[in-house]
Image 1 (cartoon, rainbow, N blue to C red):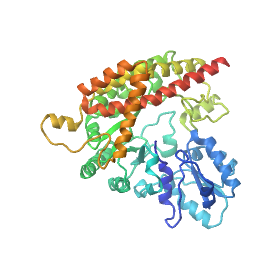
Image 2 (cartoon, rainbow, N blue to C red):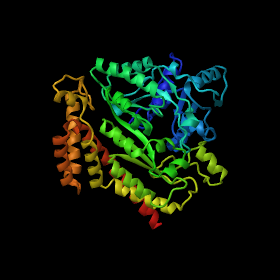
Image 3 (spheres, rainbow, N blue to C red):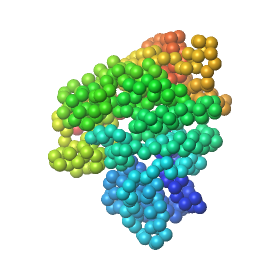
Image 4 (tube, rainbow, N blue to C red):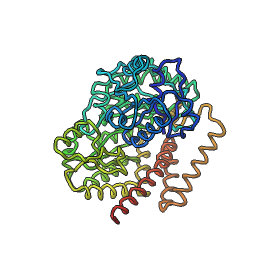
Length: 496
């Protein structure tokens, strides 16, 4: 989906006379030539990647390499990489810690933990080394405009890792990053992977105006996806400022429709801003909501899964992530559960869909598991999914380009899948994807009649959203597969 933005940023901070090679193991394996080439091996990963990361550390040491490990996992749990043989663990963000690491290496020190007490000023962060990756490996590229989040949800590790006071890159930095990927030939989706893009609405609105100018000057080469809190739905000006430079999708942590559960989880922003109204406002004003829900919170009453399913159905959100709660290291939830002696011995896998809970919940875990599986089963039933997706895009306003055309005015180029410079190969690839979707959902699926009715219906009733609608339908195929795996895993556990 995305290249490793953290490592690309680290590469830009390292001494520029160093020869650097990046191997993204999500896209390609590390070869013997890669290992032989390297003098210093620098690794990064998240909690869900910890097992593979520890294997890599051991392999690097077996090959006689000096190993440095950083990133969210190593920052939260430094003892495990060190126990696996890692020479240096870098805790925190690269802008402050890489200079210390470089000096430590110059002095000949052989191992240690590198950290710096203060958060860095990201307005000094250089443009990530996008030139180190093969663009053909990725569905989207990532950039970052800020770090940190002003909210303090009990279960979230963002505040622990990046702080509660957001820090911002300048508009000129962001424009430089857009220039860089544009000059390297990128012409597709850009994920702005901020912890909360609207953490400062003043900053976000100023940046969006500059991005809009840049996009118009370059014939709208990108579409944008980002993460934001639900209060976005109460700020139509912000939504309009986002859709103008071609933002298409926003990831929103909805978590639970139960206000008492949200209060226990310290997710008060979802109580202050009515969630259903907010989601509908975001939808009708031109953005796709990708929602996230969690089951297993303390204080959760029986039937939580069905209440989530009902909310998703009423709001017509096409794609939602459904997670079982896991306690992340050093969060407020982690500290509270540890004090209450409810944490399991295992750290937790970081996999919130297939993995197990790593603490003793406040209601029977078997009930949570049963509701979790039933929730996936209902939400990603093919007919339910198609109906939600259809209704979502029917109620979304037409694109600006379509509205301007209806009024007989000219409009700046606007497209969710930018077409400037598209090759014949790309056009044929898009056609093959469409034909595959039509085969899977229009021929093989039990909902095939519904698929074709909706296919023609969206073309007739809201044609400017046709591509977005089909994109969401295609995402459903991945979710159907995940649904199948979750149900099968549950059945295996019941047999045991």
